[in-house]
Amino acid sequence: MWKKFIKNFGFPLLAVFLLWTKATLLSLYYFDLEIENSMQKFILIISPISSLLIFIGIGLFAKGHKRNRAVIWISLVMSFILIGDTAYYSFFDDFVTIPVLFMTQNFADLGSSVKSMISYKTILAFADIIILILVNIFWGKKFFTTENIKGKTRTAYYLVAAAVFLVNLGMAETERPQLLTRSFDREYIVKFLGLYNYHIYDMVQQSKTTAQKAMADDSELAGIENFIRANDTGVNAELHGKYKGKNVVVISLESLQDFVIGREINGQEITPFLNDFIKESYYFDNFYHQTGQGKTSDAEFLIDNSLYPLDRGAVYFTNGGNTFTATPAILKKEQNYYTSVMHSNNKSFWNRDMMYPSLGYDRYYNENDYKVTEDTSIGWGLKDQYFFEQSVEKMKEMPKPFYTRMLSLTNHYPFELGEKDLMIEKLKTGDQTVDNYVTTVRYLDESIKHFVEEMKASGLYDNTILVMYGDHYGISENHNRAMSEVLGKEITPVEHVKLQQVPFFIHLPGQTKGETIHKVAGQIDVKPTILNLLGVNANKTSINFGNDIFSPKHKDFVVFRDGTIVTDKYIYKNEKMYDANTGEELKGQKPPKEDLAKAKKSLEYSNSIIYKDLLRFFEVKYERAKTKFE
Image 1 (tube, rainbow, N blue to C red):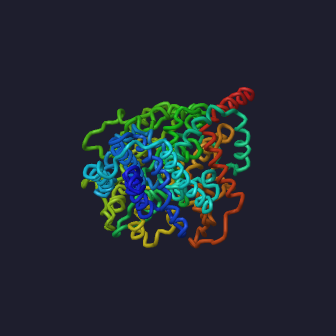
Image 2 (image 1 turned 90 degrees about the vertical axis):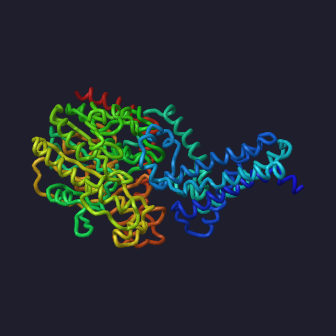
Image 3 (image 1 turned 60 degrees about the horizontal axis):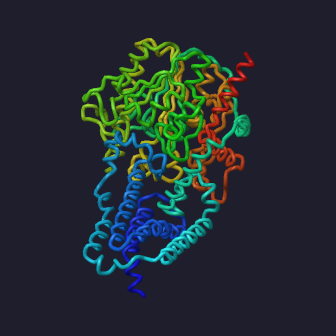
């Protein structure tokens, strides 16, 4: 009996054991899953088993000698999934989703970013496949290959796999009630159900969201509009329309985090120009990025739409054909602005060439519109200095007024720069990513300085609202050791949240005196702020989850895509509450119910708008109201 069991199931179970070992080691020691107790650790250890039994068990349907080969091929696929998760997590500090996998046109441009994520450790991760092949060659026929497995035996095998999953799910629900229905964070699914079950969950979610648009109708907008009105904190009346008719330039500062502002290394300022620019601009030092898996494209989406990014994938890919009420479309319609995006990159990267028309842009200046040579480019495209120089020349010829969004490139992972462009010494933490980061940040700072000088020389500066924002983090928590050395303090959960602060500048025409504003705000607030300066009523022309930052009633409240809440008093992350000033954990405390409800509803309603394309109904409603008014 035992010999027969080994012959039938020995090889598949060996494959399950090897993959389970690999997945468990990664989950325990590579992914930062914040294991809080021994029960969670036990759940994490058993969580891969059920899905591995199910998928490897597919090989049991193969006949005779083909069975072991089928198991090897399935193991190879499962290993690629695991390695893909590892590579993605190493940079994005997140877990890949199906929408991300459809971003294939981005892969060719990843270049050095992907290369820097691959090491000998990645190659060693396929050692189990080598073991399986050797076992099959030398011992497969003797010990493991036998007659075909009967249907009842396979059924019993899958019942065991299902039982393991139910035990796993029951334990997970005990630790995290309503795990599959209320979690904003993929980390919880991975921690309690395992990587492979997470991917199954992701597939189910994808099928659900695909069906949502077809089932939607305009009645769903009413509740969202009531929520928006209830959370509207008004505008700054003194600034309303004060800069109507002025040009607007919005600059995305690639991967720029706020911790570099005002910081010195070896007596050298990392951002000398931006440090001075604070003295003649509005600078917000508690401003957060709120991006998800779409990173730079998510930041673009937030800035233009005042909607949250999706919990899975990037809106630019999954819903590029939706109807949106974005800033460029509103300014074109309401005030006859010329609208454009300037970015010296492949026009199809992040599906931008398809998305920008949906946002109302007249023109997308991409790499084909710039003079790019080997000497003027690096990594992802044209170096920032040359990009800004050439862009100002194009602005001179644009119809006025214009709304232009610009995306810088050089300060992009893995933060490589040629010797001749180095203007500051590298750090010496031993972490190449962190050590290089300050050099490309310094280059970006110098490029912005030359851009402002060019704008002044062209006569555009005094007639332009200049908005600059960091798009997302540059240094993930995988580099906490080095960052702790740079900052001179431990990277606690609170410090990690505060590292999501990014620079945010608004310079108004004629402004000579700066002001640093300490309000807690985020990228969700940029659109209504810009529209108010230009005299457009943001909430009459569109649906916005943010508010005018200059409003005296603006609430110090930011919610991240994973449900983290930041206010001026507390930080709420992974169901733990911390004092925002001291970082002390406030054990047993939770945020006010209204804050929790606002965070949850904001993310849910924003998801509904995107997944169901609800703004198509708002657009019709707005046009009818406008026609009636006229």
